[in-house]
Image 1 (tube, one colour):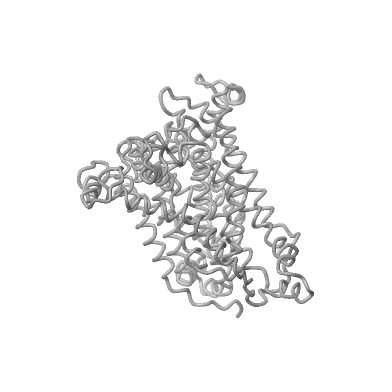
Image 2 (image 1 turned 135 degrees about the vertical axis):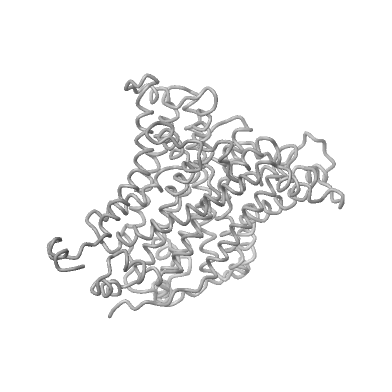
Length: 569
């Protein structure tokens, strides 16, 4: 820039990054606050547009509304407690003991983590439906019983709780395992040197240090269960009861009740925000702070003869979450009928032929799913990269607002956000309902926190002096980000893209409210097929979804680690 232009800007070179960052903040605010604003409007107005609290009054007084809320709280509380009682001991056994096969068990837990809950619910429907369930068929064959006999029934409140818990306990497991990994070995060694038994050391040292992670995991499990739509839609609706998410969905069926749906979404939003704030406070508490570094690797606790019962406990959990459901999906995908037969004539490729060559919805759903996944992952990666850079480097005034906007979607349940988007984009000035654009906005916005958190962690490992050098040489912040920083965090860029892509292609809660005949995605097709009882076709599409998911995860984890960056000049 010449001298006159430099003087025109007060002696400083004009940096185009500032207006770009400001535009980005406005875009994020619109993406989040526009649908939430319309949600508030519809919840507080009647059909004539007059201000009213009638929707909330009905929400609190109508038995058809109170009962789903009560069921939701029962399910969420039960799932949270069950996940904590199961996952916390599992994390300790795998991270701190000599239990055999610890690594394969951990990998199976991760498989449960990436399995779409609605697909897991369908798998358990295949296993435990009262008449056609594979477990019940084997039970009747083994004991020569009549068709009315059954061992298990997935279409119950208990069945719903167990189905959701199977794909929620990994949240508790990961937090507790990470908490155990951060505890310095020296602290537990000191306790042992002073004469404490391993159980007393666990009670007085290990558990207090990991307690915030346990409580935070319990809260996250509660939120995941409370906001889950897929599993209740597949299990609770055939059983004849609603949770709040399925009740909200039903209000968009005929006759539609948009105002009541908006009001019903508000309690989920408020509870989610309150519990996330509580979880943040727990993880940030200083009641038990570790002073010093890791202090070496912890010695594994020797379980003796308890090693095998411990392994049996872990295999029981992962068996119910992964091994049995995956086996059921594979068996159903190749079976010609749902009736058990071990004859070779009972198996074939009929379901694959139907799904890929005869079912008219498959090509369009595949195209929409992967197009939306690619677009959401690409745009989401770029946007969150820039936001994380601005926030971590405090590049502009109000950078904290950008960080808040990027993480705010985590506090909005998918079904609630879908309701808000429906209201926002079925009214002028921007009517895009029925197009892929509204699905793209939903997928992009809900997955922003994934990318933001990934890049925040990556930027903490890069010293600011590296980009300051490029700034001294005349580069703008955007140029420094592109040419200096991005190449150093290429691993984080690719892994973020992969994880946003995976999250987008399995999204159901928002998609089920926003799709039309021309904008169906795989998750919605699977849900529709389930309503028609097409379990063989569901198994084929579910396996395809799992194969794509695991292939992308394998790609992300095979990436070479970025070269270490010096943290000082």
